[in-house]
Image 1: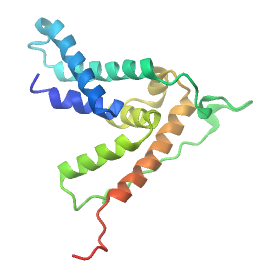
Image 2: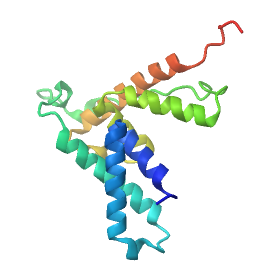
Image 3: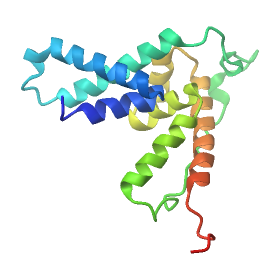
Image 4: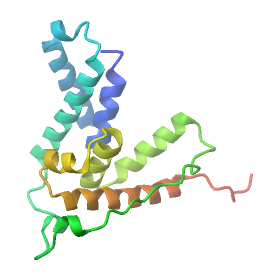
Length: 174
C-alpha cells in the first residue's frame, strides 16, 4: 500500500478534483486490493491494476453524482455530423515553467486542474494522464464524441490561462 498510495491518491484527485472524495476513493481502491491480495501479492502488474481500479472508481463516483441536466454542447445540431468539426489542438508552450522545479510544476498543474469544471477536468485527465482515446472517453463517460472534443479543447484553453496566470513574471523587480 505504501508503494502505491501516492499514485492512487493523485490519480483520484486529478479526476474528481476534491481532496475528501479522492481520499475516500483511494480507501475503496485499497479495500478492493485487500480483497484480491492473494492474487496481487506477487503480481508485476499491480500498479496498472490499481490505476485502472482507481480510474473506474472515480468514474463511477462521478456518474453517481453527476448533475441531472445536460449541457448544451451535448445536444446534436440538427443535420450536423459531430465528425464534421475540425479538431483544434491548443498547447501550452514547453518553456512556460522552465524556471520552476519539477515538484513546483506538478503543484501548479494540479491546482490549475482543480480550477477546471468537472466535465473538462475529467476529459483532460482521461486523455492526457490515462492515455484514453476520444472515442473511448465518450463511451466511458456516456457522452458524444463532439462533447469530449469540446470539453478537452475548452479545458486546454482554460488550463493554459490558469497556467499563464500562475507563471512567475520576469518583469517583477527583485
